[in-house]
Length: 172
Image (cartoon, rainbow, N blue to C red; front, top):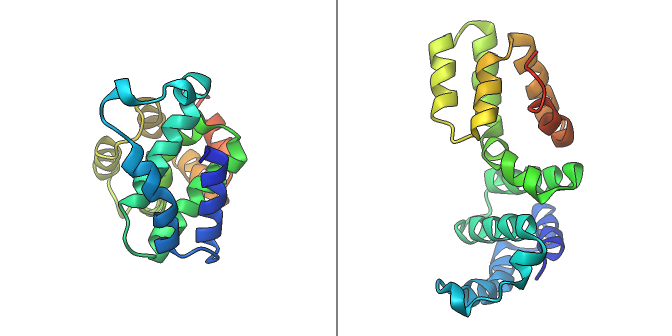
């Protein structure tokens, strides 16, 4: 199975056309065959597309770790697939992964910070404990309230390509 095939299966799950149990059945042979001894592993996928492989396996194990078909889990996968579609990059999607999974909570906290119901210290604490990549944390720590609101609008709109580009520029 390739990243593109897995992404298509995830789309089917997200839209309700593929039950989670069936998705698990498709992934089970991959997980069983995934050996911990790298001398027994075929390195060619990692040599041809290391970023695709890294995202592929992160997705496989993320799906495998969920036993329920909750709307929260579906929304997470929907956002991840949307990020991959919008950015066209496994590397960028992988980089955004922690923020994508945390997106609803982050935007609630950011908006509460913007309205004054969460202190700057509280907001910075959320960022510090977030698990986001270092450069994203720095950007968020330095962003203005307007910049944070614009970021959340882009996240809510699924504009992950714009979000990724935003983190490459100084915060507004």
